[in-house]
Image (cartoon, rainbow, N blue to C red; front, side):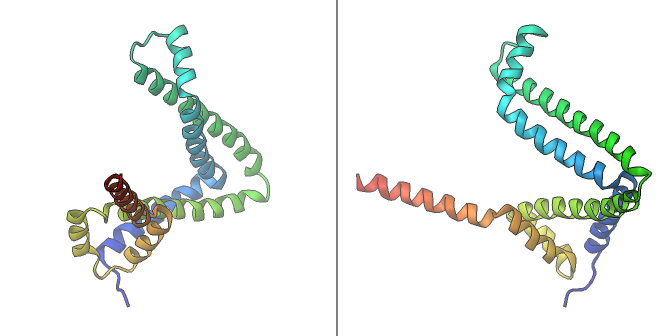
Length: 181
């Protein structure tokens, strides 16, 4: 059985602190911030070129096509994110004085803690694929209780190992096809 390590104390403290922030913000605001970024990135990636060209034509002229797309992406991301946060603020005020206010805070605590745990799990799992980082992390996580759970969670989300295998299979099939021709 794994013991608690300094790694567990640091990660546990981060999760608890951000879960407490979730109580303060509430579930509606926590989920809205994440939703605003995800939707902003999605819409920004779809329409960045068009919005960037409009900005370049009407606001400030950019010569570089990459800069035009980047500006369009950033403008869409910020506008959508801020718009969703404004809507969440309105919804939060409506919910605050109802019976859902307490539930909003409790769910905010749970979501805030879960969100940071998942983000850290993704980061640590991705970093563990780098040999130098893995050796360094193994020194501090060999008695950890949370690290195995984070690696398991990260592997489910990222599927880095599967992606590496698919890339290797693609490389070998390309090489095989190239030799057969």
